[in-house]
Amino acid sequence: MGAELTAETLLVLGGLLGREGTVGLGWAGGAGARMLAQAAGSGAAAAGGRVLSHDAPCPSAAAWLAESWGLPVSLFVQQKGERARLYFFDRRGMPLGRARERRLEGALLRSELRRMPAGRVGRWESVTGVRPAYAADAAKRSQVTQAPLRRLEVAVPGREPADRALAEALERLGCTVRREASPGVPAFRTGRGGFRLLAEDEEGEPLPPEQLLTIVALIEYEDGAGRVAVPDAAPAAIDTLAAGYHGGALRLGRDGPEAEARYGELPWLRDALFAACRICAHLGMTGERLHGLAGKIPRFVLRRREVSLRSGQGEVLSVLLRTLPGAQPAGGGLRVRQGEGWVTLVPLARSAVLRIVGEARSAELAEELCAFCARRAEEADRGLPEK
Picture (spheres, rainbow, N blue to C red):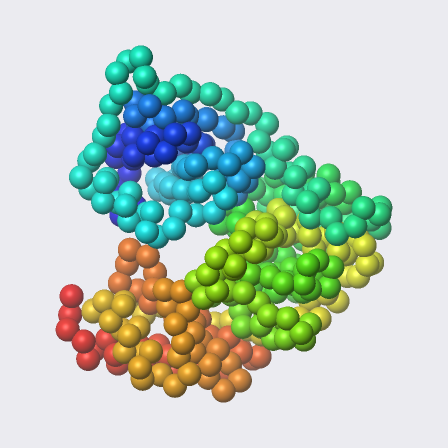
């Protein structure tokens, strides 16, 4: 939110959220997170809101609960050491849109706090058992067939709360789950609070989130409804894959409500538990190995750079849209076709930084594309007045 996280700030923020009616509230990671969340809950109740305090162990579980219960707004506080991060979700379990975030930021800066008479203060309610319900739903909804799956052994070596939920979900799916990495056994772990999936295949080859997202898209084309919707910055390899199935991939920010609706229908595109269960359900149904499945997607490598700007992100992107051949708007950034590769330029929120991602069949070409666009961004920045 661009503000220092104090109990006073969270009290005001909670009051703003409380105007929505019912507020989902969770925390993890330490006493600081609990204090901040309780301050937000007090503010929400003071504004007349109903506070649902739950035991979700990670942000992705809180998002699942928001969707499952149709909560108008949810807040989850995640603490790591001395730092805390706030996650906001709407009734679809999706992050709040930027317009809604801006309204919250503006009201927060004005310190708007509405207080109710004592008789109209909102009530607190507790919700328990979120993790097992979340894991069970991921296992159930991710199955591609009702037939029994072949025996599948997997490893979940991570120790984060989301990893424990992942292990439970895969066990409910019918997998034999080891909690330590083992040769010849595919391993899965979570990142970013349960929203990203990482893996190693049976040969020990790492599979980053972007490759796993492409694998999940492949499974959707082979086993599912045959169309996916992905974030603007998702790999162009997904479009190549879709073309091979005579389809197309929708992109958030480009294809409007249709893309948003489709993205909401496919939780394995945005949640690590659902993605891992979807992959393992496919492996259990077909008898394939993860290594072989990864070999069926278009080969691509990603390289990243970040460019600090003196001027504004929007101004630099406007210059690049005019001057970079093949540049097209992509959500809040740009997407550029360069020969056999692609480059995505994304402005980082609340900072004067541009993230540049090069995508190509080889690491060398991806790095070249990244370096080329970084130079062009720096040149555009130098030609603009400093902010």
